Amino acid sequence: MTDTLHPCVRPRRRFVLAFVGVCMLWVLVAFCCYGVGSAEFALLFLLGAGMLLIPSRTSYGTLMQLVGLAIPLSGAVAAGIMVMELLYPSAEKVPCTQMAIFPFMVVWFAGPVFYPLGFALVVLFERRRVAERQKMQK
Image: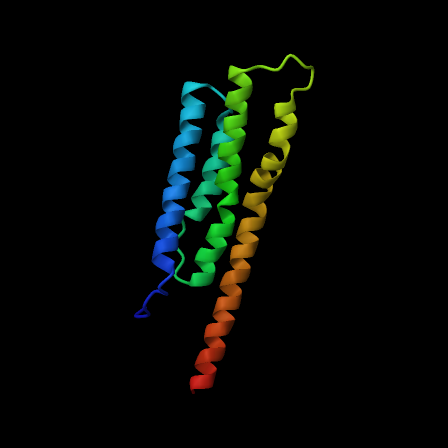
């Protein structure tokens, strides 16, 4: 492809990579140093973050990636809440940290299901737009 990238694609891409890297680093520290999570936790986090590492060449695709940053952010916040519960355990039968982690876990578990669907819609709409543009030029 000889197309030039949209001007907003490269800065968004750098931001996505840096953000995912910071979240991965935090989850790795929480996983290795504090022992929170499990192999399934790490695998699901890597799946959610790995989807964001697929490059996008359009401004709509990178915008979808910015929306998808909620997945690794939710995983990192969940790991942080688990570390907080480990360091400062609650005396209650149901700790308030379990209630605080619930919205982040919903986003984190639903993200790998809904993000590919949203990204597929973005790709479909972009292809339609390009096809219509090429049809108009002929």
